[in-house]
Length: 138
Image (cartoon, rainbow, N blue to C red; front, side):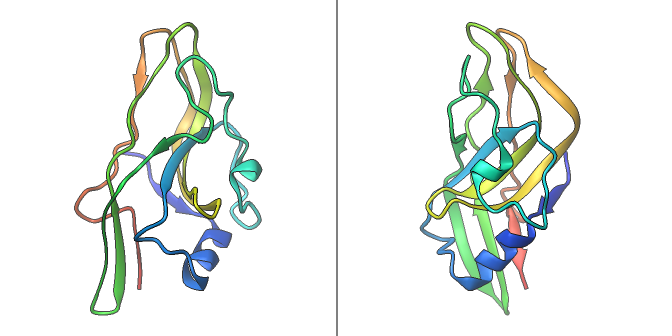
């Protein structure tokens, strides 16, 4: 599984008022190396073209739970739906970006280590941790 990396502006936005439990979360794909110190919105992240089975803005990751226990907040999201290349390829992309689509704040990304291109009929899934959650804030 790819490691999750936080955007600095996203952490700031979290503690300044994102309503994580009720906002809409999405995962989008990008091939641009993230700039964690300054990227703030999906436009900064430069997602891949919306063609051949990839929808602009990415796929929704529904909130499973949003809770605080003992001073630590945890957000658990369902895995977004799978992308399947139809009518042409999807990509290349190397990063799956988690963002709050209600506020357009980037929160973090998964780096898959090298560019991925899906050929017609191939699929790609981002699998989120249903136990430990996507992130915690302590």
